[in-house]
Length: 434
Image (cartoon, rainbow, N blue to C red; front, side, top):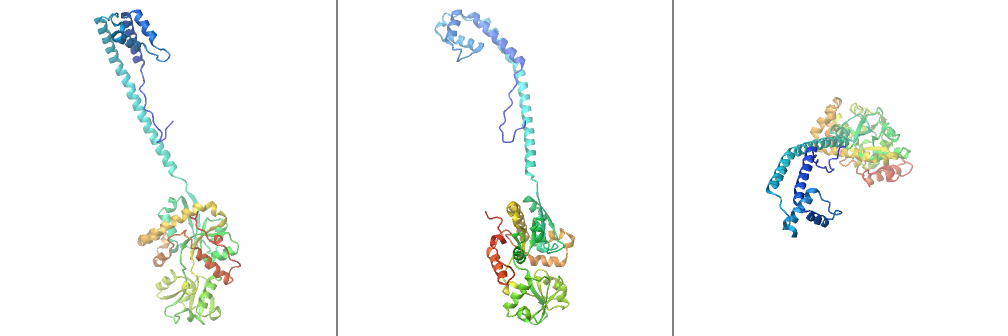
């Protein structure tokens, strides 16, 4: 049985050979015979009476030694005859010869035993090292994450966390999935078809109000990306100049509320403009002058896309036009499974945070790694968007700004977008909170 590396080990004891035992016994018998033959019976009897066999069991050589001491130092030394010189010399010679013959036989088993012990120790260490390595390689937890749209620089921390091996460092085998329909990810997270989905804070408030079991567990982009964009060569210099203009949009609902708030901030209403649904063709519609402005554009994409087409754009930032600030891209998960998966969520967000910090420190190298992860990402637009997005990433993805979620909940309730106010714990959580 092998021992653990921390278990004490016993040194192998030398084995006593049969030859050594035989010689020792013969030597003891010879010495006893010689000595007993030279001592009187009375001396032997007297000394034997002094010994306590119950507490001091002694071998024949020890008894002989004690009898010799009695003969030299005891009171009966004068009457004890001394062995002849020839007998002493014969006994000493026999003892020396027995010692010489016994030593080689005794040493050989000892060396062999020590060698065998060393080999056993080596084998045990190797076995323990193998066991430690196997224990260190814990199985990874499979984890599905659905993006909000096709992979783009807004997903950089996730892609880099994958490329740098940070998800695996935190025990996760993450699969990043791009949706065919951008409205699907939160629904799949609510149904636990995926572990995490990327969504938008404004949409989260509406979806929870509709009864979806969702909760925000982290933030990817910590500022609004939504802007109203116009052509820089137009006569629109402020939101107030939108009066009587055509404004294109992609998705109704929240976008209309945000636009309405911006207009109200400048003394206008939705009745003062003409809303035109352009689906997802925001930039083309603006470039071809189909509309005078678009809402729902992303500040890190549409402006760069327009510049590539030789048209400079002008943006109006919603947080500067009366709309409460919010998290643009967030991580949402099924609220019912939160406690069961909290450790995995914390590990996931830790990896995203480490990747974000690395990107901020190495933006150029980060872009190259992001670009090389998929040939389809190697475009000039993505490169421009990469650098425009970096300042927007949440440096602490798990951190929760409670006031931001309460304020936006109130904002939507006051405008009739939700039926009732939800408590903060129903909207968002801090996975690192005790």
